[in-house]
Image 1: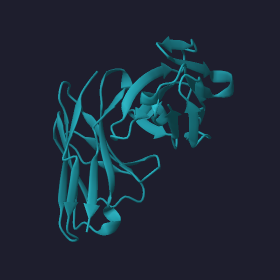
Image 2: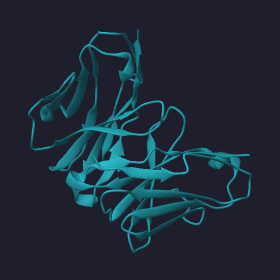
Image 3: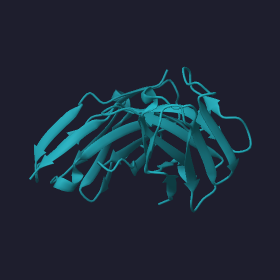
Length: 114
Length: 115
């Protein structure tokens, strides 16, 4: 199946710093990518839909100035958590929409903010 | 509104037992897709199956089988002769074709297969 690469897989940062997470579709072009957040033992919560060449669409309650999304090419979307705080600690997962409406997921990024 | 319900939060079975994971969905769309994904402890979601709302044929893939019943809005997943490697969280999801493939996930069922 299609491959989505997400980097880094794990990051620890100090409170107040910014963290960038990359999501790449390795063997297909993805005009649409999605960013999710997952708390322990909970389901995936859609944060935003990232569209290549245009602004991301954020879900209600997600701060767009806090979670900056850039989708500069058909194979790369980035999520930047700005001025991270401990409450931003979570598991972030990206996905890319491939053929047949199947979403392929990255391996996730575990963010810990100290 | 779209909603996916996985009423079973945790299930434990002994190896080689069969287990069925339930999924019930709500949507007013006439055309949609249903999915099952597996999330092992490593965290990556692995695609298992996609079912088109027009296709109610049941599907079997090795030890996995899926029962799609449109009349009851259910899309259940059965693992036959479970193995320890099947231990994971399983998510059922619905995709709206009308809104560019937006997914709605259930809350997941954590399956533990005991050796």
